Image 1: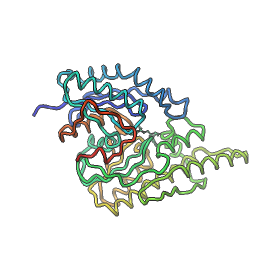
Image 2 (image 1 turned 135 degrees about the vertical axis):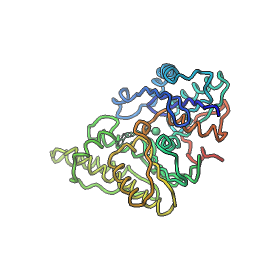
Image 3 (image 1 turned 90 degrees about the vertical axis):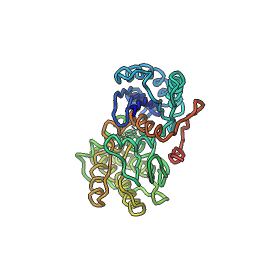
Image 4 (image 1 turned 90 degrees about the horizontal axis):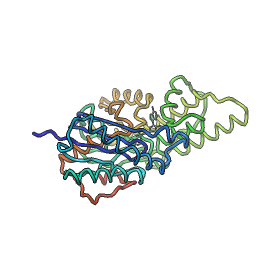
Length: 338
Ligand code: KG4
Ligand code: ZN
């Protein structure tokens, strides 16, 4: 069988990332990160993100193609993030993908960003179905049941802030940098319990809620400042993180009692978190169910996961027309194989 070479384009947030992938083999992977430019805003500034994607995409594409050593004429398909994400940012990736697909006369494949975060586990090992997926990123917190390949059923989600967003907002309140997740994770390593914070509670059994916890951290910081007490940042990071990770583990435990699965996949930027990995491994041992994390480099946004899922979709005949539009709030189950 002729090998397939998929070019994947990711521009949903603050990384312009393009890769050439053949099945699970990454032939090239180039990312232009905008983190430094967004730092001053303490989060991603959408208009600036679009402008920077426009500036960076040409060079990123050229470099990814060159490094892959795959001639343009050998590409099998162009996969691109169709949503969810920032509307202006998504448009830049999709328009570039359309021009490439049209000029090379090869299929265009619109990929769901969250599904790709889960499918990135394939870089480590094949997915054992049925599976349970947990997406923990800057924009989303979702629990997904995966009955079979390319099928996703949303069973729980955040009712307010996403988990990564809550890390980033709390880090900003504490006067730390952006993105806040890795900084809080690092501080918490040398912290201990000191501050009382409430365990977040959501309405639906598999849902999440983080805005109450964020407000509680804000009130605590104000109270300590008024009392002229210096906040121990290590301990505050520890107490905040303990509760955030506990909500994830509690929901996973509950979901594993309801859904009989053969594997659990945890993807998205927050899946890099050390406490989450530690507790997830303990739960894996306890339940005897393998928990798969994508490789570290593939946990945050990247074009390789888009190409990887695009390759699976191509095999399943899931290709799009050149009139495809972006969908900033595309739901994961709507991207399922019919
Ligand atoms: O998946 P991702 O790269 O982008 C989105 O699709 O949103 O996730 C970025 C998020 C940021 O909010 C960042 O703070 C968080 O992932 N993050 C972490 C860690 N590393 C990145 N959160 C907690 N602990 C970490 N070690
Ligand atoms: Zn992401």
